[in-house]
Image 1 (tube, one colour):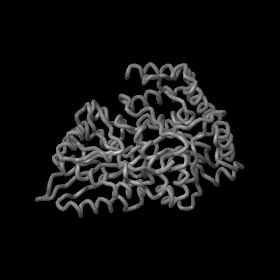
Image 2 (cartoon, one colour):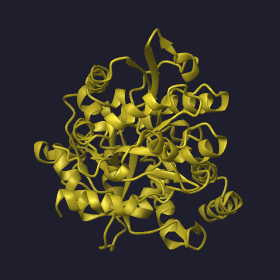
Image 3 (cartoon, helix red, strand yellow):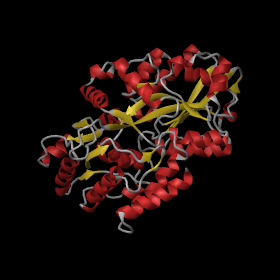
Image 4 (cartoon, helix red, strand yellow):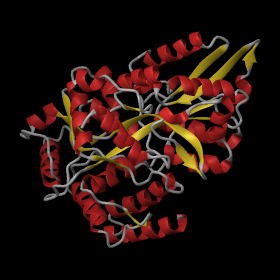
Length: 435
């Protein structure tokens, strides 16, 4: 499949409904707190100061994102951009707090899981109206996240979530090749954990940041072509796709091959543990490759598709996520804020950003260069070509709460407080109330 065809496929899958939810973890260091909000950003004389809150900068090579912003400022004299950067979890907390208080940054990095709530709350601007006001042609946008027929988020770049493998740990455990099936994965995880110096797999299940349910639990369902929905409605009970995946994870848990601390662990924790060589395998975003290489240049790691259920030979669903962008409704500088969005979504800049982020671009005409320049990302591209992007939380009402509801019951099952069947039934009941 050509690059153009692949981009087209992404457009067809994501459409205008909504893109992926989960953000990507950044460095463990907390970012600056969001200040007084867009209304306080103001202008110094004739200079407009835009606050831009996001988790992207820590996940890119040092200075790379600031360099793009410097270029924007050079091309748009009179506009200065103040980056408020931090890990995904802390950025999420800041953005949600700013939304509630009406002090959200002018420009905000968004997760698709937040859009429905923010749109109902009136805290993010209607980009369809804003694009019309400034005369922006949206034909080059690969997708737009909408609520009630209006766009509130534009996906800037999109990431796949393959399985990361610590080659040295697996080799030392006598595992000759990356696992391709669940049984091979379980055997490899047990072999790594047997030495006692590292865990076989890591599973973040924090209820505070519950995207582990999406990235690390349901990804096993999608990897075998399964679904957690039926006709757009919850289908957790009497669903062999979901029950087999959750039972598999329960077996890994009972075998003691999963890193301790799962119930409070967030996504950035698993990245840190993998980077420091304390876990053999993890499901993670391609956005973390730069971070891992920068923090541990000696780590020998590879990527592979998430293992499928034994006997499954169909296409594998591949979790994916987006760096989305929006404008705060409380911003006093919406036109200038959209200039920044327009800059980041332009063909050349979006190609560059996708390349340095090792992601698929949000502009349909942009092409990243990493596919041919880096063997690891070439592999990721092949994995993507052979499967299909999958994330059924996309576009669901209160998507993050659905993850949290499932996580609460899933934790109780892993902890032995209820059976996995009872956990799925309880989660189903909660989901039906939300729908």
